[in-house]
Length: 201
Image (cartoon, rainbow, N blue to C red):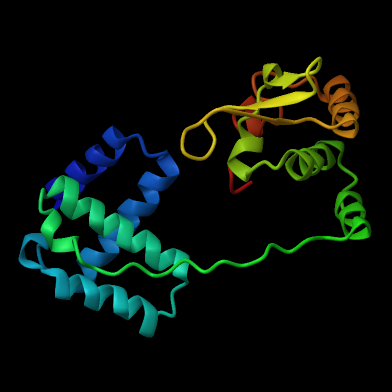
């Protein structure tokens, strides 16, 4: 079983999944194998359906969690085990479309004012105005800020793609104040010892 999990990790890395996605898929597979306590070669599509159904009925798992488990299992059989037929006709949970929550102007101001820490305020403003994900704000380096073009380079964002996003005048002002006070090194918003700030932090 350990050999199988090692090969699965290898295949995820070869596919180019981010470390976070690799970890999520790996944990899902360990849970799936623990649920049946049998080698995956001895399981069929009905076993897989029963596991996914248990996530819904017994664990009350979110749609996102169920889709993650489905994706992890599908990759295991289609790539690592080279048995795509096993997962070919397993239904996927339909992704619900929800309208995003839109904050009022006053709510946004209250959010920014919730912290008196210049570093935290600058990060909040940049995330909000530039539409950044948590992992993206943590990996920004000073050269990503394009002052003349009023743009921010987001490197290897979702889907391992680079993109440019807007940089507002207000954010630039805060970034300049932050830079003068903190003089960050490699990362614009470093964690301890100058290392990249973790997503959890």
